Length: 146
Image (cartoon, rainbow, N blue to C red):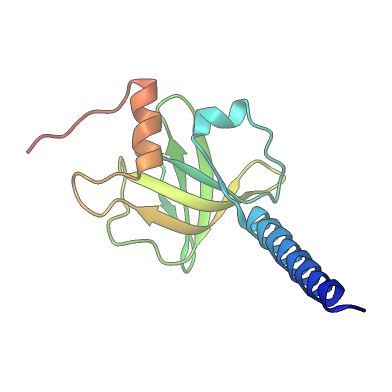
């Protein structure tokens, strides 16, 4: 092998390695992707049981039911539709009715959303961007002025 052929072989090997590393990175990121849905969006979407998604909206009034231990059941609504959510863990301190929330998890076969994380708004003016945008698009967003 000449010097030029060795150099081309090294460059080709390096490009092949970088291509493989890039492909594996995109594959891994694609497996971790969680798509965001509002309850009304779930009618048009095809979400398979067990597929990880983010479900956002407002905690529906009168639906918080505390079970044994740290289990909590509640509904997330966008004022059109609501989805029953079950969460087993410690809820954020500011979790309450009529507050913006994003849950992450998957659906069971019976249609109940099992959340493994719950994010709640942290002050009077903050709401997760996805939730606020979706509520504005539906015309139910109300600006708060101070």
